[in-house]
Image 1 (spheres, rainbow, N blue to C red):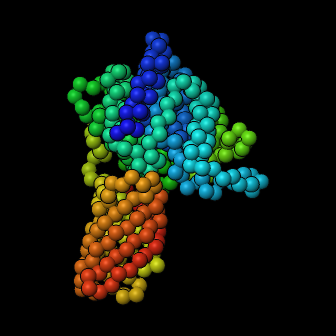
Image 2 (tube, rainbow, N blue to C red):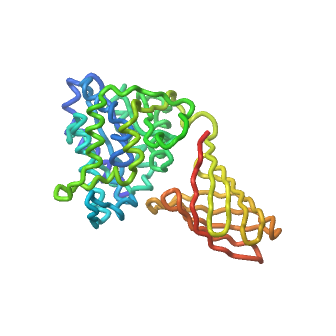
Length: 357
């Protein structure tokens, strides 16, 4: 609670200092970002367009991004390495993003970095911050990341904005930009392609995400953390935005995400339902048996770690089981499964979602 109050006070003070800029503005645009570099990968051209239009732009980052696993394998062009603490890594990411925003014409005074946990941004803090801006700037444009980005922080921001847009008495115009879409084989239904208008500015901004200059505290973090996204954004002739900005709390229909998993114990498939539940089926190598069950995700306070518990039936043993799992960075997991009166096993493996509906 104390952390939340500090962040809200910082938001209010920053907004008062920025308020004078509104007088000459054509429009007010508020950009909500979960982490540094999301804006340059998914929104760079739209940011430049907004700056050129004379709009007042506010950028609110909810996390410094200090928990990224890239911190442990940063490497320069000459093979040199650097050892950064989580705090130093977060500050380096902020410098990187401010440099990219500067290329796009954004003044540092328009940017606010909050310090919520990377990988576990609290929904309540997001909602209160967004509500504050919505009440102070009626008729403003509110932009954030997409529901379909496969990162819980991204989904937290998208759902908070969508729910806010449904509230009576608030006049806001939400938009949802895709950051991870370059990893998909096909364009999801309901996604709009917006042609790039300022290709040179976008390329220069993306180049800031690759700069290695340790003397200036620059380590090319984004280009090492998500090299495929940075490269794809550089090649792309479009930015991708959810076509419908209707006042809804989530994408139409139930969100389903099928996936596959493999471990030292079994081969499995799962169907994730609305982020919190999943139906699992797996084939166990040792017993040559099939089992199926349901898992539920817990709300935890551990950055980049997602905890699950579940139960099901092991057809090979003919007995029920219970399970607990810790998932790291959305792909790696450790799972303990106990089949009643029979067996307890530990599995280490990989899992990946293969699509959304």
